[in-house]
Length: 278
Image (cartoon, rainbow, N blue to C red; front, side, top):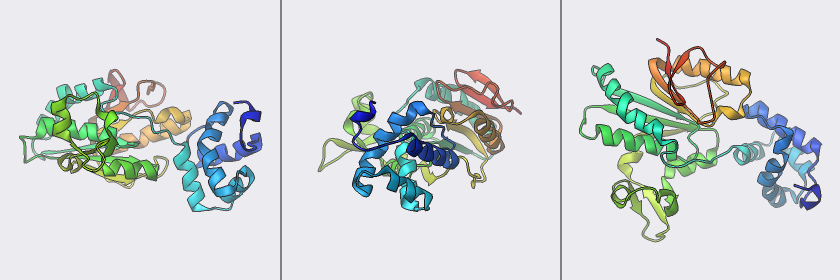
C-alpha cells in the first residue's frame, strides 16, 4: 500500500510499537511485510476511537488500556476457517483414531479432544459431528471437545453456533437438516443444533500462558496457528502440548506446518498427523 493512499499517518514507529506488543502478548510475529495488513485491520478502530491518530492509539496501549489491548489482539489474530477444512484429518479420525480409542479406552469409555485456536468454531463443530456420527449409538461413552481461542470476539461467535447459510453450502440437504436449524426471522442464517453444541466447551486461552486444564487429551488439533510463532515459541508450545496429551495420542497440525526440528516427542504418521511418543 502506497503511504499516500492511507487515510491516516501510520509510521514505522507506530508499526514497531504495535508489532512488539503483539509479539510479547501473543507470540505472533509481525515482520515489516505485514505493515499494510496491520494498518488495514486497525484503521477503522483508530478512526472511530482515536480520530485517526495512531499516536493516541499507541499511547493507549502503552498506558495499559485493557480494552484497547484486547481490541488490538482481536483485530490482528487471523480467523480464516471452514467446516471440515483439511478433510483428510477428519477422515483419519473416523477411520483410524476413533476405532482405536474405542479399544484403548474401553474401560473408561471416555474421549477428550482439544481444538486449540478454534477461531469461529467450524473446527470444533466438525469434530462434534464426527463424534456424534461415530458414537451416537454408544450412549455410555463420555466424549467431549474443549475449544479454546485467544480472540474473545470469535469465541463468542463460535459459542453461539450461528453462521451465514453460505458457510454450509458444501453439505448435502440431509446433512444440513441433520446438523443445522434454519433461522426463522433471518433465513440467511443457520444455527448448529443443540445436540452438537452439547459436545463442546468453549474457553478463552492464550497458548503462551500456562495451560489451566488438567487433561489428559486423546487428540489435539492445533492447525494453522504455529506459523505465526518463532521457532523457540513453537518448541515450547509443543513441549507443553506433549505434557497434556496421552502417550500414543494424536496431534493434528495445519497443511503448511511441520514438527520437523520442532519436537522429538511426536512422530509423523500421516499428512500433518502426528502421535505422541509412548
